[in-house]
Amino acid sequence: MNENNYPKLHNAMWPGVVGKGPDSEPVIAFDTMLDLTAAAEVDGVKFDGVDLALFEHIDVNLDDDGIKRLADKVSGHNLKIGSLVAPIWGGPAMGSKEERTQFVEMVRKSCHIGQRLTELGVRPSGVVRIDSASSPHSWDADPSGNTKLIAQTFREACDVAADFGEKLAAEGEICWGGMHSWKTMLETLEAVDRPNMGFQADMAHTLLYLLGYNRPQDRILPDDFDWNDRAALTEGLKTVSDALRPWTIDFHVAQNDGTVFGSGSHDKTGRHCQALDPNGKLDVANDAGFWLRDENGQLTKTFKHICWDGCMFPNAVMTNQQTWNDILATMIEVRKKHGWYEV
Image (cartoon, rainbow, N blue to C red; front, side, top):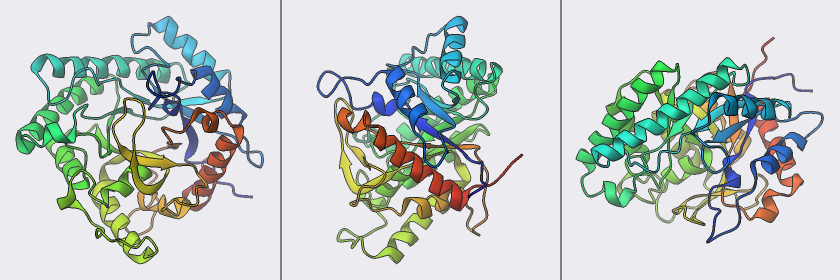
C-alpha cells in the first residue's frame, strides 16, 4: 500500500467543453463531469478535487452567492477546487489597448472567484491559468514587438492578481503565440518578470515542444526521429523541463502520440491520448518526474496538486466511467513514484 497523500489528484472539467460546440459534439454538462469524477475509484482511492474552466460551464461573472453555490456543489461530491482557467480569449494579450484591457479584466474576475473559493475553504491550492489568446501566425508578424506586448499585458494581469493573493500560470501550448515553443515561452516568462507569474506544464503539450511544430528552429528531436530511441527522447524531455521547471507552478499529467489535433473551434495542438493508449509516446508515470523532481532527482513539492488533462475526445469516451478510472489509476502511479506524505 502506497502511503503518499500528496500531491492531491485532480481531474479537469474543461475536457467537457474544449473542442465541443456546434461544429463538433455537444458540451458535456458540468454536473455530468463532476459525477464521473466523483464516481471514479481505484483500490479505494478517489480523486481529491477538480480544476475548473470559467467559461461555458461556469460564468466568470458569478456573484458571491453564485460562488458559494459552486463551492457547495463541488464540496457535496467530496471534492476540492484547484486551478481556474480565465476566459481571456475576447482580448488578445498582444492586441489593441482596449483588447488588452479586456484581457486583464477577465483575469481580475477570475481572481475574485479564486479568492472567494479559497476563503470558503474549498480551494486549498491552485493558480489562475492564462495564455496569450493570440495565434503563432499573428505573433510571427513582429516577434519582438508582440512578445513585449504580451509581457506588458501579463505584467498588468499579474499586478491585478497580486491584489487577490493569486498567481498566474502561462499555458505552454503550441497554438498560442509567444508560447508556442519552449524558447519563446521562456522568453515571454523572463520578459514578464513578476514574482506571481509562472508556467503551467502539460505533458502532452511540452512533448510537442520537442518537435518544433509551430517553430521548427526550436525543434529538439530530428525530423526523422525514431520514437524507439528512448535515450534521445529522455534527453529532449530533460532539456525542456530543465529550462521551464524553475517557472512551473501548475502541472497537468497527460499522454500524447506525437501528433497534433483540433476539433470544434480549437486550433491544432498536442493530441491528448487516453491514459492507456498504446500509441502514446510517453512513459507517463516516469516522465512526470521531469517536472515533479529537480535536476538532481529531488522532489520539488512546488505545487500541492496535479491535474489530468485530456481534451477533444468523443463524448462516448468522455462519458464512459472506465475512462476516468483508467485516468485515476495513472495519476495514482504518478503519486506513487513522485509523491510524498503529509500529516
